[in-house]
Length: 299
View (spheres, rainbow, N blue to C red):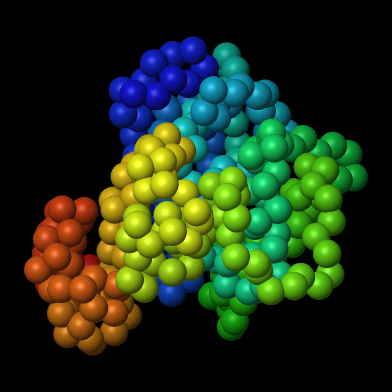
């Protein structure tokens, strides 16, 4: 059960797939008009820009207006919904992408840490840009969309560069402080450290042996408290969260390689094939072999 904007919602829709999610570059972008989108959450990042129209969005228990120049960055597992005002349509650019696109290099990882810290210090998940700032954002988002729709060489490299530039403009508009030009090696985690740092650690190490106990020891948190925090902040148990990341990796390997299915399971962080097969069936509703065959037939 989740409370959002004063309304009690029973198990809001949970989205865990989007086009290209199983590709080597899990990024999807669309330009679409909406009148309303019901409350939901997802385990990927959503980045959006309002081009036309007015409306209202609720994120967890906070409401904000939407109009031309509203940029919103939704981190994984945040519950949100939006609705256009009467006789209005919200025309938006929307990007969906995996968190790993922001943790692939040190420059982006620093920025991601700043975003997480800002959220936990009360920084809102949206900004409003006007005038010349909006025109600059619009040119950049138009270019990002044109690149996404193209079939040009080095497309993933250009998309990631443009995405990071768009995120940089968002960060500067939000008032976050500059990140130091040089960052020293990360010290051992200390008590009370940001919960999002734990989430990022799981994203970075989910292919390795990882358990709630090991994670609790690393971050100096009691396992029971960590389990509670996962449920409260993510709306999902730690093991389920870990399994979803591993199964997503397995789906990518099933499509992009000819590895034997058992090997795919081991390469995706599972210690045994039965556990992998059972988890895959539970999450995807089919066996790994059926998934590979189904995707091969559709290509």
